[in-house]
Each structure stands twice: as structure tokens, then as C-alpha cells.
Length: 330
Image (cartoon, rainbow, N blue to C red):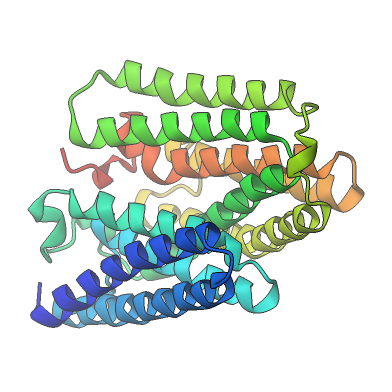
């Protein structure tokens, strides 16, 4: 890793943490709130630009497209989350969502920094990745995952602004259990069955609890205007991510036919990507036809975020195996 790449990566990671705390601080101080929100945005822009340079420098150092292992994909994910938020905030007044976007990016930086040194170093590609399809297939998927995360975070904010505090708590619980299972699967040797049960069971229990408590409203917390705003933001983010996921699945099939002689093999990760695609297709159908409330749609975005997390990181860290298991590092 070159000095430029290391310096820019560290700058981006520190900036994401700093912007998180500035955005959080804006909620604690009323008088300078707008100033702190703008400051948090400026810090995030600095982090985004630094990460752009870091990814470019890594590509130059490697002499290839810099997206070949888990560490590099995490850099791309953080870049796409920050970039997606910066685009969305130009269209909608959502600076109050900045602390969650910064937290998501900072978490990916932290996760990546804990990976083994072999992931950080530039190494030759494994045979399965030596193909021009890699730079066609993978970037749209990573960007779609980032937009789905922004949609899920907007769904959480919608629940908060709609006064569905209990449903929000259940949703956060399921998300935290899922992230914990992935972290344990990455850095420890906990039995894979336990980890799979933690992720799947926690997701089902959390979303069920959130749905059952959806009618419980904290009236003093309701801000209908902001709730409507975050419902719209979630929809727009999904409308960006959905075609990107579609492109990723189609190009994945073309790459699979080129590499394995079949367009679709019902590999676990392929199947999970299809399930994720269907979940967002269902969201779009429900949203366009107004067949359920905005709060229920927010739970669908949270469910989609959990499915995205499982598709992106879960299958390698939770031991589901399959043809995509070359992404594991232990």
C-alpha cells in the first residue's frame, strides 16, 4: 500500500467519524444546529474526495481495477454510501440523516481496518476473478447495496418521525443482531449454525415485533412533514438502487456463463440476490399502488436492508458456502 493511498484512506476514515460526531452534535445544540449540519456535510465531502483519491491510487498501484477482495469492496461501499447521501441531500433537505450515513461509512471503515493484513495488501487476483466481467458486474452491485442501505436508514428515520418508537426499537434490534452475527462470523470461530440462527432468527423476530407494535404511536414525537419526506427519500433511493441491482444480476449471469458454462446455478449468493431483488420489486409495487401505509413500507425497507446485508456480507461470514465462497479469507 503506497503512502498516498494510506494517507487518503486514513483521511477518509477519520472524516467519516468526524462527520458522524458533528451531525450528532447538531442535535444537541439548537442555536448552532444549521451551522453544524453544514460543517458535518463539508467534512463528509472531504472524506468522499479523499476516498475517491485512495481508490484511484490503489488501482494505479495494483495495475488493475481496484475491486477484488472484501477490503476493497468495503472501500467502494463506504464511497457509494457517502456519494449517494451527498447526491440525495442536494435533492432533499435530509442533513438530519447525515449522522446515520456517516455511521454506516465509518462502520465499514472500522470493519475493513480489522481485516487481516493480507486483505489490505495488493495481491494477485484469484483465478475466478481474472475477467473483464469483474469491473462490469461488481460496481453496480456495490452501489445498489449502498443505495438500499440509505433507503433502510431513511425508513428508520421515517418510523422515528412518525412516532413509531417501539417499532423502531425492534427494527434496530434486528439490525444490530445481524451486524453482530456478521462480525462474529468474520473475526471468530463461533459455530456457523449459531451465527445463521442469530441473523435469520433475529431478523424475523425483530421485524415481527416491529410489525406488531406498528400501531403504537408516541404522539409527542410525530412530525408528519418529515415522516413524509423520509418516505419519499427511501423510495427515490430504491428507484436508483433497483436498476443497479438488476444490471448486477444480469451481468453476473453473463459472467457465470462465461466462467462456468451456465447462466444460473442456484448458488446460495445468487439465490439471495434474487430474493433481495424480489423484495424491492414488492416494495416498488406496494409504493406505486399505495397498498399499505408509509410505516409498513418503512419496515419493508428495513427488511430489504437486512436481506442486502445478508447478500453482501452474510454468505461469506456466516458460512453458507457456494460458488462465491472464494470471497472468504479464513
